[in-house]
Amino acid sequence: VIELNALEYIDSAGLGMLLLAREAAQRHGRGITLAGARDQVARVLAVSKFDQLFLLRS
Amino acid sequence: MSLPGEPAEPAGEDAIRDALRACGGRLAEGGCELPPDDVLLCLALRTDTAWRLDVAAIVLDALRDRVALPATVADAIRTALHEAIVNAVTHGNLGIPSTLRGSPDGLARFHALVDVRLARPDLLRRRVLVAAWQDRPGSLRIEVSDEGDGFTPAGPLGTPPPLDQPFGRGLGLIRALTAECIWLQARRTLAMRFRLDDGAT
Image 1: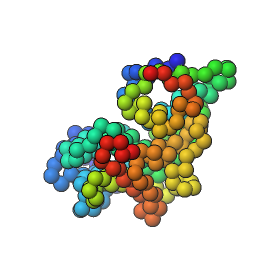
Image 2: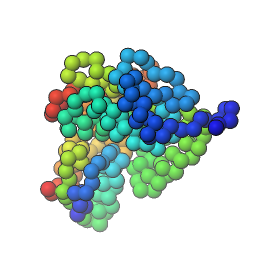
Image 3: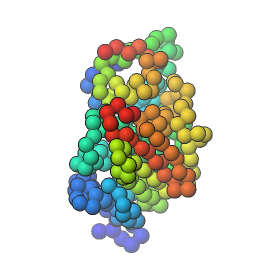
Image 4: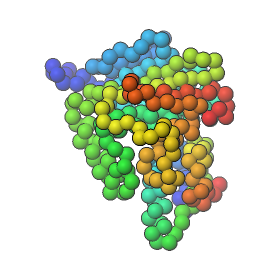
């Protein structure tokens, strides 16, 4: 689980890092949950359709 | 004081904020050409300054002094403008491909290459131009231009990369956050339009 509650801003480089973490987790048969995204972070995850790649938890 | 042929001292954040807050709303950093006249705001920065500072946040604050922006619109402007400036610096003026960001090792090489290229006076002098116009009721046009010569967006603008591709996501993000987004190759300019009503993006 990656806790995003304290994150105020994310850009495409940050999205890329989350995707690299997802790739690494998948190599070990695991998935990643993104928790607590809010405001700009939640909006960017939504327009990037990350709900199709990660478990998103409020 | 700089020597002949050397870049002038880079502009600081406070000086940029003061210039944008002033009536004219414009700043051309040393060695940069003056921007056009008919703008709401205009900023011409050296490449190293555009990389060092959070220019999108600075410009957004200056825009908020002039235009009422709902929170979601302000978020969209900051995010899209940041992506456009990072693209102008890294892929435009510094000529570094985004594909390096496709792995953790590549990411480290990407940032090392940024440092190497920013050490070249010919590249750091290239400018990034940010200009904003309120040329239609209910919308804002913001353009970001670079002076690079290598990389141009591949394929139709805004064509999204595969959903799980860890690099090259900036343009897709810009496309999703703007009402309109056009790459003007002749001027090496990304022209973005934002609707100012809430939920516009």
